[in-house]
Length: 367
Image (tube, rainbow, N blue to C red; front, side, top):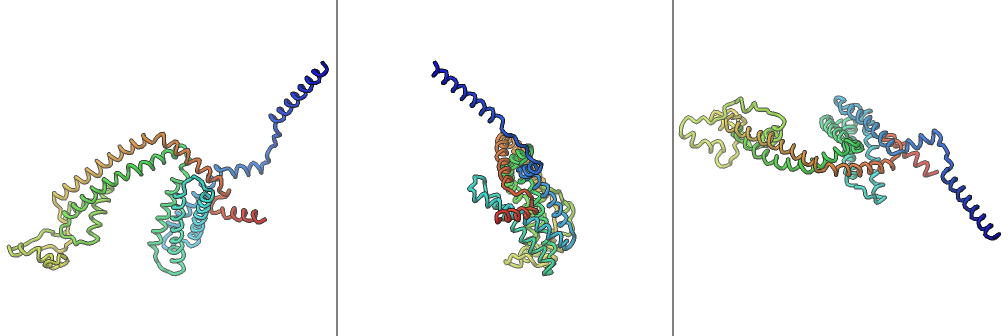
């Protein structure tokens, strides 16, 4: 009995130790963080880095917009600030893409590589044409410099749609649906539109300008103004009003018989003899000739392009949006995960202050 009593006491002792250890585990030593540690943890969080980068990016767009709107050659100091800011953004994107490549991550890299290439080309043009070209070499290429900055401004504004908006639970899935609509439906719309645009634009221009020389201006009128721009404007002045006579005025049968030979200068088919046109009562070969045929061609083009194709595109957008509704949520969650993982590896300071983080990390690695 004494042996069993000692065994029972030993089991009870082990049970008390187990309860004590369990209580010790269930109540860990909760050490409160200091305010400095709380700020450090908050500042290191991916969501904090994301919003600080977003605010800094908005400031960058403000200065960039101001630099583009500055008259003539611009402000050299402001251009240098904007260029350095854009260069820091490009360098940070390059560093993130390189880290993804080295870590053999499953996240896609083609978009990041393309973005780095576009930003590098823009920085080179900005520096060479705007900053160095205008101020150091005096090239006076103000219009090309303005065009480069304008295209760059559009790119950096559009970049918000793919860099910062996907984090939103409302705008993120909407951007996924919009991307599917553009890739699937809009390109189908463009394929159909090109058929109507080329055929109708060429037909309307040929009927409206029967004697116009075969040059770049004629193709511009046919494809750009009569084809593409007709979707957005309804300029029909040349169909309503005739500036100069455009009909061949032959006084005798001989003039009528040899009209084409004289206008084309024999069999050369050049049609560049202004005297021959003036002989038949046409002051200039660029004259317009309104007719009911031109109106008919224009009306059928407007009906097909503006009514039929746009209604078809709207219906296709609706079907695609309903089809990818559930998929867009899943894709958005994956994209959001990608953004969180990316900003978890980014420095605490956004561009252009990211240079301070680079210097600090370099000093810490050395010492």
